[in-house]
Amino acid sequence: MKLSLSIIIEKLKEKGITVENRQQSEGLIQGAVYPYDKKQFEIQDISLNIWVFDKRNEELLDILIENGLKAGYCYIFCGAEMSKSEMVIQMISSIMDEFSFWKEQILLKMLEREDIQSIIDLMATKVRNPFSLMDGNGFILVRSKGYETIPKGTIWDTMNGNYLNIYDFYSPKEWKKIRSQMDLAGHRHVLFRPEKDSQHVYYAINLYDQNLVIGSIGALDNNGPFSKGQIAIMEMIRDMLELYFRTQYNAVESGTIITTAFNRLVNRDYDVNAIRKLLNKYHWKSEDIFYLIAFDFPDMAHSEMELSSFMNLIHMQFPKSVTGLYNKQIIIAVRKLDYDLDSKRQRETLQKFLLQYDFYCGVSYSFRGLENSQYFCEQSCYAASFAYQNEDSEEGNLRILKYKDVQVKHIINALGRKEEVRKYCHPAILMLKESRKKSDQVLPDCLKSFLANGRSIAHAAKALGMHRNTLIYRLDRLEEILDVRFEYLTDDELMGLLLSCYIAGEI
Figure (cartoon, rainbow, N blue to C red):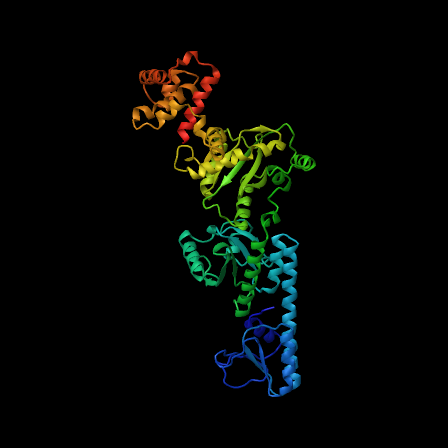
């Protein structure tokens, strides 16, 4: 495997080998490691060169190359002593083997889809200062072992737990500055001293999936300064985490928040026994009444890590819920007995939560029996998407949208995706809506309100915000244009006109 030269130098120091930089000393120190000048020597295939005064040691170099030693360009000056050079080579080989085994163990955990906490803990065994994994929004997902003794006044003393936002430690202005530095650094790390803890140096580096920042690693020097070798190990960890989140399609399922049985249910993979176990676990009954709540977010191209952190935030808001993913939206089922979304207090609490984290949500019709969730998940998902996409409209300004308020729009849009919906519309209604005269364009809305309010002129006029005499005049015009008398129409004919008004309003 490829190791940074700085890692090998530090490990050799730990084993008692003298290491100095050529810029610091011009003398050839026996057993020292020096940077290798690529301009002076043209060696393409050999990344580590052992320079000895006895040519017999060339055999040792061949052994290192065969074992895949790729450690950066350097010289190790061992003098003419065969035993000394052999000892250094054995030490380097031991370091290589140690790191190869460590990396193989991590990759094995990844392949077996073990939880991210155990992977992070294994990674941290090579790092002197423990670290945390955060998503792209600054939410702490996982912290490695090693935080048992938390220095007072540090970020970990302030935020003793996972799934917390580092906004709680940094000021918005300071965090914006740090994020800007990290974005400019790209794949490189940044070191800084925060305002609240100037005694410690903090380390941060971004994780990328192609050009998208999917998260970051953060640490502080509570167990010693960040050395070149430690920083090089952190970069290795970054590379392996990027690989993990690129290849693990179901990475979010490694946590405990997603409910597998419910996730399968909303995705039409119904398991009767699993649902029964789920009901027993939560002490729910088959006749209980449920809602489905779907959540949408700005810039939905989120990484698996971000979705995982969003799930945890939602679960903390709704601890008595089950969670799944449907069409890349987070969807939860809640029992009406636990969360009555018709109550003003519950809606205000949810509204505050959505505003705090910039979420939008859609709520399905209430229904009886959790197993029926598979039929109503699209209701909540459509309402959530509509709330986000129309955040400035009358329907979306509260961030909470019930499906009953957009059901007709959903039906018409669903028909429109498959075929031309104009053919279902009454020609005269369509003609009025597409007229250049404003006096004609408003007539379908008047008819829709009149029919939707049970043909009550008083209620329809109030809903439209117009005088009842104005509405009566416009209804008379409609009867003339349509060549009908509303009082003599059948229920099917009235429904046809109402549907035509809705279709005309959507095209």
